[in-house]
Length: 165
Image 1 (cartoon, rainbow, N blue to C red):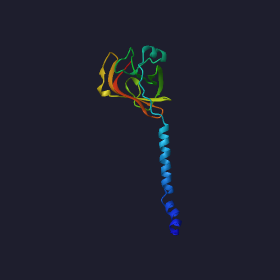
Image 2 (cartoon, one colour):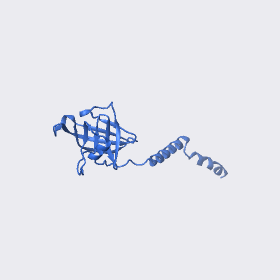
Image 3 (cartoon, rainbow, N blue to C red):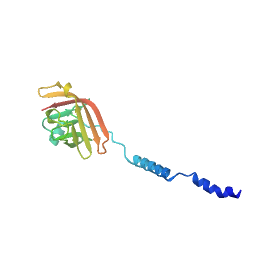
Image 4 (tube, one colour):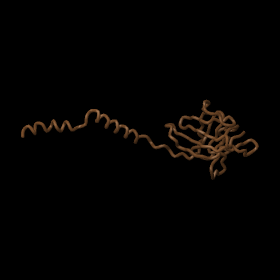
């Protein structure tokens, strides 16, 4: 009987996790805490860029405008892509991003990619499906994607992009 009492602590010690199992459990716990600390990406709804916004931000010139899908309320675009910069409107503030000179060139010297401190923007257009919409404008089916600083998609929408001078 005494030998059962003497061996019992050794048997219980053998049932515990090995150092490798404990390290793996700790790593899982740390990963879970880190995942819960990252805030979810914002749900961005780009505002409509008006003629007043174009004047204030000096967005004049050739390029491409991503047209609002509906309810433009007097706006001309939800994003503007030009040779040197791209723009969109967030909560009544115009966000300016630099053109990625290494990205694909779109019609009228616009670029496919633009990067800023807090956001990046990608404009994908189907150049083969473009249709003349005015004397100096062509409408293209397009997809606009905006990402946050953590490279998470915060806005993605298919629509029409009008390129011209």
